[in-house]
Image 1 (cartoon, rainbow, N blue to C red):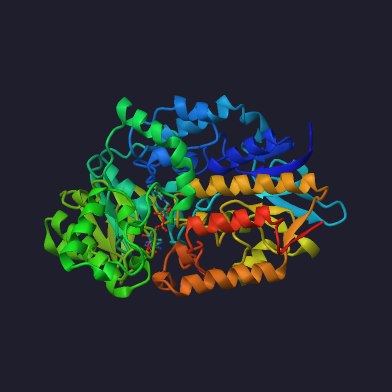
Image 2 (image 1 turned 90 degrees about the vertical axis):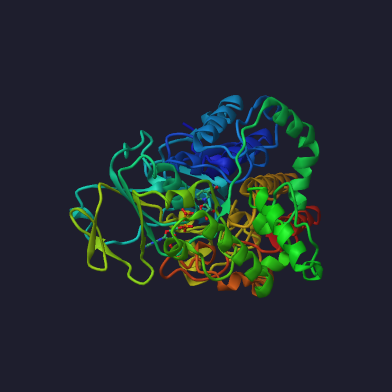
Amino acid sequence: MQHDFDAVVIGAGLSGLYQVYRLREAGFTVQGIESAPDVGGTWYWNCYPGARVDSPSMVYQYWFSDELLAEWNWSERYSPQPELMRYFAHVADRFDLRRNFRFNTRVESAHWDAATRRWTIGTDQGDSFTARYLICCSGILSAPQVPPFEGHEAFSGRIVHTARWPQEGIDYAGKRVGVVGTGATGIQVIQTIAAQVDRLVVFQRTPPFPVAMKNPPHEEADREAWRACFPELRQQLHHTFSGFEWDAIHQPGEWSQLTAQQRRDTMETLWADGSLRFWVGACEEVLTDEAVNAEFAEFVRDKIRARVHDPALAEKLLPRGPFGIARVPLENGYYDAFNRDNVELVDVRATPIERFSANGLIVAGREYPLDLVVLATGFDAGTGALTRIDIRGRDGISLAESWHRDLRSTMGLQVHGFPNMFTVSGPLAPASALCNASTCLQQQVDWVCDCLVALRDSDNSVIEPSAEKEEEWVSHHDELVAATLFSRNNSWYTGANVEGKPRRFLSYPGGVDAYCQQCEDLRINGYPGFEIS
Ligand code: NAP
């Protein structure tokens, strides 16, 4: 069995599959390692009821193969998880990608050896591989975050985190179910199971700011219309702020020139699209100007008030604070669930969940009897998948320790001190939260492959960003964040959901277009600021 490779790729999700494909096509030997039994990444693990992508499938897909684009038929605008899994399985089969992966295998360690200029990668199966390049495609949202509620071992029911939902499913029909968490995941679970369970208790700490999704089926004529646009679309996605097929309709400064009625009409038009356009498709001031943001926030609150029959309950569901400084989810029946008699909302902001009892959860001394508790409590995002691996770079420095002190990277692609390690979807790039993830992930995979080819062509084999280059990027990133309302964020976007995690806005806020251009400038100028040998 071969143990020495040009590259080891961690993860068989959207980016890992494509990275392995690109490197193999470029003539590198590559070993993929994946902890799940099969391909799919986030879509493998997040098989909870109602899981669905909220980028349109037509812009979420791979762009590298015209044949694939021509033959795959998306059934609806926003694909459900089972369809995405069928897609990734099809891609893996069509391009024979599984043969390059070791499944059911978790990377536990990766150590840089300066003498051999190679990484040694150890797994939980006792394997040891060496590779010139370590490419982490381990996902932004792949390390589940489980709150430390006491008493869980005494609970007689079942507890499941949404990102570890059993593949065989759970029979929740007719049961008493509690859902903790009302982010994008909790919303999808709640709206999906409400009508099927006996009782649903929703434990809400922070009310979300969702946009109502419109999800029409794709008929053949729709697919043909999309296919006609694919050649322009695959270029266009890199030239917008958020990696979607549209951009903000108003240039900076224009919003304030509109009348109140014109602004309202614009918001209605964007809302009617039933997509994330309402969030990042109006004008940049939504994310930078408190007054403009407040208009959007109030607009969403009005939509919620109109949906929830009981005004007192609607009030509890209303999101406060700025709109869109945390990830905006899409909902499709979420507020209707709260109009049902079998659904109860428990506010756990002022009085947090105390603990599990044998029969359920205890809040403010009251027991909520439950058969199943669903933890839709999110992730140690952006960094968690990597800090849970013992990664050691030059002079044995630990990535986990470095990032626990200060979360830094160079363009979300490499980290100073960790030669030849690449972080596709790493922190401080747009991929981590502020774009149609697949646009950014594919762009980063291409960048990494081009970089490795350039090193090979120039007879070099080591690349690492200099300390100055990294400082330049981190300062640029922080400066952009400071000019937005994101600095007030209190979610996984800033690491605020994980105790002790250093705060820094995870995602580069300068836009996909600007980011792609900077990556391209590096490539054509021979990677200035990176030490190459
Ligand atoms: P999340 O956005 O971090 O939400 C976690 C939820 O759990 C929040 O409501 C949080 O409340 C709550 N929570 C955490 N600990 C708690 C505790 N001890 N007590 C009570 N509540 C607690 O996680 P997520 O919903 O899994 O979503 C993460 C990201 O995944 C999304 O932002 C999105 O990017 C992605 N996602 C995408 C899709 C899609 O494409 N359709 C679907 C699902 C997820 P606080 O807000 O108060 O902390």
